[in-house]
Image 1 (cartoon, rainbow, N blue to C red):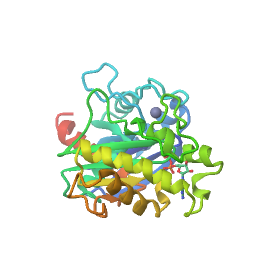
Image 2: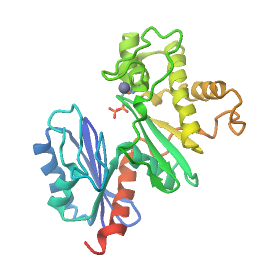
Image 3: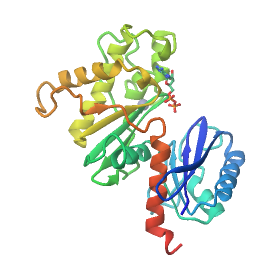
Length: 294
Ligand code: ADP
Ligand code: ZN
């Protein structure tokens, strides 16, 4: 059995083939160009690898409602050529294997819950803090979808009193988390890239305040045993203690089980490959569901 995984990102596509034990046999990365160039290259690769099932973790938004006529499509992305693109149907048509699609962050949450930092947890949340902010939500064995899929990057936040840019940069919302705490928002606010801001810069306290609000909302909604924070901005290790402290402060004793947040708010162990590895788990799920009857 060979499982194929595609982690579809806005700038690059990561492709891998793995054996039954999900050991990676081969992997490549290609730039995300227009779909008419990029998708045939992806299909060629998986044909060469002779995969039996495919899992895709993709940037979104995605249509994940199996009853929808546009199931498996990327929907309203601003990314050139990818708007309303039938990603999963095109790949499955070309490859003739069973497959499953989910958001990149749901795939990452799946990996972390089943094999990684949240192993044994009933519920966990995986958050990426990078060019955008996104969250995958794993609840009692399932990845959460419904009307659409979680879009936690656009939850509204209370502005920090000392934030010089309290409305943020999101074109849709004043004061959403992505607009206030993504890498690009930090760059706009402080006039230099997030990676160039020293650890003692006040930027990090403000960043921690916003990410702590996300942690509090996570706790109050899905009651996760683990909140895993990954993505480029989380390279800043000093953020973890700041976020834990802010989370405890904002909770204000309401959840006595959260004492210091040390066990709760963690880096993902699979990062930066949690999404790719989770896509292999999606391939495995697709095989179990449809593989035997084609
Ligand atoms: P993407 O979200 O596009 O998949 P990343 O997760 O790498 O990619 O996030 C990119 C963002 O993370 C950029 O805004 C960048 O400034 C920020 N970033 C990357 N490395 C660091 C770092 N070491 N410290 C702080 N921010 C960083
Ligand atoms: Zn927004």
